Length: 407
Image 1: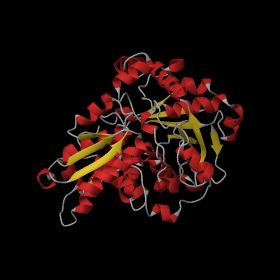
Image 2: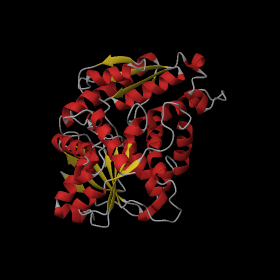
Image 3: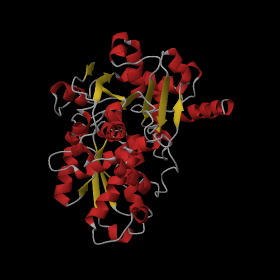
Image 4: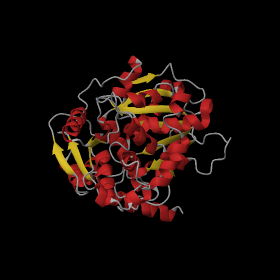
């Protein structure tokens, strides 16, 4: 399914949105997270797929590879850890603590009774647990019925306390809020709801770091290096963080934004049809675990509604096919490890180039430079191997061999 947004505008960044998220705050966030030893130093790489671009009659396909961000292999380490640092500093305004001191655990004694809680499909909770462990505070993670044992074990490895519930992701969000109210804990969620926006905003602001890195070295006044940006949906946090930065930087000359979701977890697509935050119409559960969300974040929707040009969905089978395309290094390009949710952007692009009418409607041609964000690597290694037919280690070995042959 797809929906061309008739309300998508080309204008300067709205002042009320700039007051919430802006480039200056994204750059501060990047400086803060650069002090955390669990993140790789420097930006994540952007790979080019020239052979596939030629095959699909495009000028360029770029893939920002978030599997290289940290051992957690996901872009989520840009969101929850930043939000946790900001939360701690807001809750202790009388202290002169710095983000670097928090991430180094220098105030663990003072934070041992500070408890944070979140619902997750996997990567958000794992990132929060890792940050909480570094800072020395307690972390409780609520998991729904469809989260695999492999993902639970990865979160528990960071000393998080696990609460399992029946139901889906949206049910786990409600349970996290209930437990927080009952015990006086602090919810660190990537989705907003009535009366709860500061922390989701901080999470989204962290995701804008992706664009700050991408535009390193691009001169002020120079055109945007991408004509199209394809982004995974979920509740909308990644989309909001990325489009806000591009929109502020380029205004009316911004790239075209395309949002992709699982067909059974289509809350953003439904929001575009209704012109307001809406819920998904399907059963939500998807192999794209990180995108299996049933309700749009109202705060994120404020950033998306004015500038996302196209909302679309893909099937689980298409996402798995895209994982394999990236792993194979199709047409002679470099092999890339991209997880179930990470490959959704590639699945969307393949659908776009195969539909001539839609391709023309969104302006994809031989001059287009398309940015994909592979938001995760093999965060569930066994799931990855089962879906791709080979292990992530095998694909990384092929990647290293390719890089040796193409220095």
